[in-house]
Length: 371
Image 1 (spheres, rainbow, N blue to C red):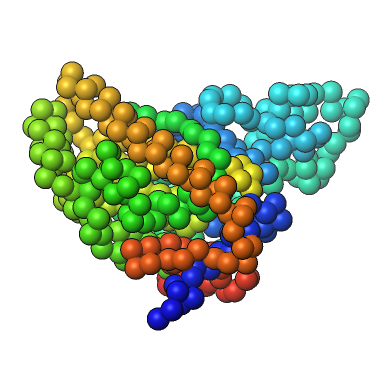
Image 2 (image 1 turned 180 degrees about the vertical axis):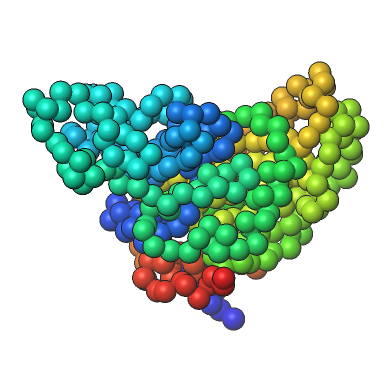
């Protein structure tokens, strides 16, 4: 085997070209089920969340218990309708056009004298809707009108997401972070443990064994590994002090990559972190990160545990941010058509890049999914 046999499928220039990102939005993001938020933020009538995927703004709104997803653009003069998350009717802040659960404008100020729109007009001016499904904590939207349902798309990860949601109900952090790196570099980095001993020598490298077992499911992948003794001891003390109720499905460490842009980590069956790597430009990304803890007694020691987990996560994240920025800078000088070299320990990157290449080549991936 020569080094050419170990080359990946994503050329260096695909990490910074504007036209490539535009194609990715159409071929990769729009046909995929994307996590845009969490059910915990949509419990009440009029609750809403928004998400930004490249140039596409999405709003999910609660209408008396029914969740609906729309393009977040008013049919009148194209203003954004909702911003961030909160609780208010689906009403444009510019001129007050108000929309119902079908996306139709049911409240148009001064309609009679200004527009004279009838029922058929309002039907035609309905917001563009998107497919929406939930599993556990997670709200997924698919922008394309056709495609597999969520359970089919996720495969075995559907049950995993349901399971970790049941085990970890205690949400303790929601935050977003901007990186100077292409979204795929973030996914490549999350897919492998090869960098851990050097980049995370004083953090992750102290707690996780590099002997990771990889498995794949359609476009997605996972690896499971063992925590080192010092980490197991720490978690054992935590479990006793706050009466943790961990899962036995992934008792030490699990890492899931859900195509195209989701990374899930699950430690000691008790600490869940869910991240989306959303493109904000050809050389920038935003990580939306949310963390939960397994069921516990909620006593004072919980605060100390949460503070420790936050500090550890921040250290690891900053180490990854800095190394990904260096890798991003290097892609501008690498031979444009040459993909990265991928070793045995980077097998999940190879799997991710194969799925990516198939989508970008417009190959039919239907056969990856089995009803």
